[in-house]
Image 1 (tube, rainbow, N blue to C red):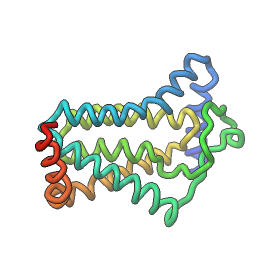
Image 2 (image 1 turned 180 degrees about the vertical axis):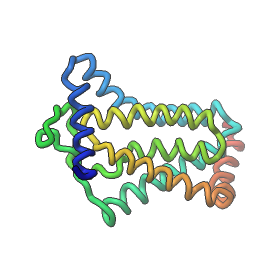
Image 3 (image 1 turned 45 degrees about the vertical axis):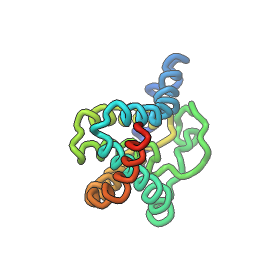
Length: 193
């Protein structure tokens, strides 16, 4: 059995374990797989205003997320490394709970963004924020596999992409702080936000 067959087997197992058991369980899977991620902008705005002393960490982590998502996930991997289509549960023997347009699935956009924020917070020393975002990321990404939208390797690839983006921004944090964060911070201070 090769790594892709193991990937498919894990997807089939978690999909059959949760999906189709009851409308209530299917609703929970849908909530975590689809709707929970919509809280992310609200969470970022909340922590931006609630944890004012952590604004640099929040900003730089968000910057790592943007880099990871656009450069690694949207451009580099699908064009130059591996274009992997989304799981087709009718072929794999699973139950389709959600419709998702047929595009690439590796690495997962959701995993990339969520793990970039998480790793960014860890690298920049905000462990408490990182722990909460890690839980948030694990819930969403696990249930995206359960729903059959991603293979487990898509999530692992997204976590690695997010970590690479966070590490890059962390490496150049002094430059990013000087030329990107400080001007934004000046605007917020000027308008007392």
